[in-house]
Image (cartoon, rainbow, N blue to C red; front, side):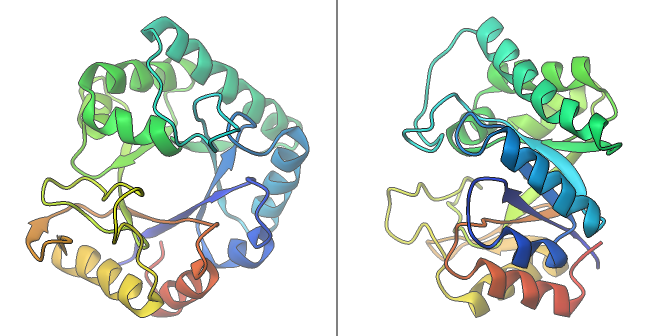
Length: 238
């Protein structure tokens, strides 16, 4: 089975150019948690060079915490926050005659939307209102997927190569031990299990069902390039 491999890009990490040939979708930071217009331009050019899908990677406005601090903001402010970021990336994409393909939330915004139905609905509505051809990438089995599907938006159920899972299907918080998978071989084994068997082994040892349509690799991971190359060589790409 072939599957999309996505990676968060344009965040100022040193390995974007090395990673890009081994992925199929790039999630480009909008400048709110990392990056900025210059990096958006550079990353879109890089994605076009390697025929990689271009996605928007919006977040809370929080460079100090790299977008990983949860925030409570009113629905109308959240909607506006997203539209602002969509526009930033879309303007550069249009200038370069590139087409936006998807939206993948970042950090705390992603995790909150996965478990908060109302927040997920606001986000899905913002995406659809901006461009109903965009695909919303969201945590497999989460509200972000179900709420987007409820309003007719295309989705891709996302799984993670370098993160462990809890028994309820959520990601192990980064603040807890064992949240990150540091062994590249184990990352590849987890992806193969999710793609081929439709399940994942949680941190406690349980096997739970999971839908894998796109696999995320974090560009800031120590073994990101190694994992991407291994998955690419296995043919686990669309």
